[in-house]
Image (cartoon, rainbow, N blue to C red; front, side, top):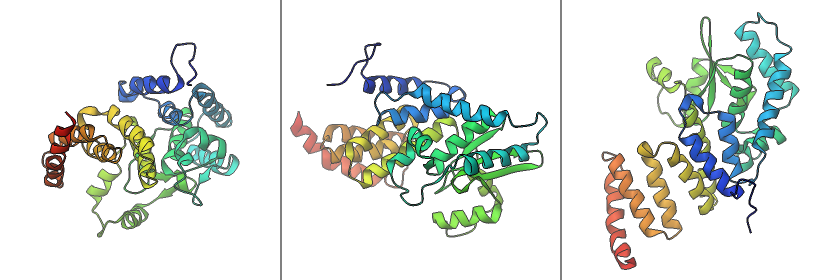
Amino acid sequence: MNNVGGDGFSPEARAAQEWRRIAGMRDEDVSLAEGALWIAASEYPGLAIDDYLARLHEMAAKLRGRLRADIATAEKLMALNHFLFDELGFSGNSDDFYDPRNSFLNEVIERRVGIPISLGVIYIEIGRRIGLGLHGVSFPGHFLVKCALRDGVVVLDPYSGGVSLDAEELQQRLRVAGSPVEVDDAILAHLLSAASNKEVLGRMLRNLKGIYVDRSDWLRALSASERVIALTPEDAGEEYRDRGSIYLKLECIRAAMGDFNTYLRQRPGAADADAVAAQIAELAPRVARLN
């Protein structure tokens, strides 16, 4: 039996309600840390969100108290790297990269290990609290962070201790991610565009969904997919297709067909549109028998 809080909601219902609230906010008002913790709350019912937010504030306050008022941005970045990775010991979990705990911010704070995006969220949130203009970058294959300096932009990798990456290193990252050729400067600049807060949260959820799909944990995969769709239901496109496939695994035929139809409405020119249309035609007789 689910416990019910003083507000009349079970922890699960409260988490769903809070996610709808976040999804309905203007992007600039969304807190990455709070959003990431509400993602974790689906796995940890009753998670003390405010306590973890307070811990992030305390970390930032400790670092901020050490910084000179006139410190340059580059020096501030070095101080942030030293504080997070040398002093507090945050690091990338290369030993068990696909452990779901690496995507849950409470676990990352407790265990001090994570994956690029969860470490990136902590890096951004603490950095912003000490006055750094940090933004997430949904780079192919590996989430990064960027910061504007007086003479340009620096691209940082929190998974590798906050190391800065030059153009050649970014090209190498693209080759590892599967790019067959070196991209030109214009394309590289586009790939380094700042991700919105909701885009970052959506990427966290898609990472989790991928882990759960690989484990055939269809109910958790469905939960992650539903929260991605809630962020941008009018333009979730591929996520409707993916949720439809998850519904099929769960034998929810009518729901799967509905999602496939929504996908085709939102992405009529998709490369797989004919294949999805054929799948709808195949499902239609099964749905008719359910009526």
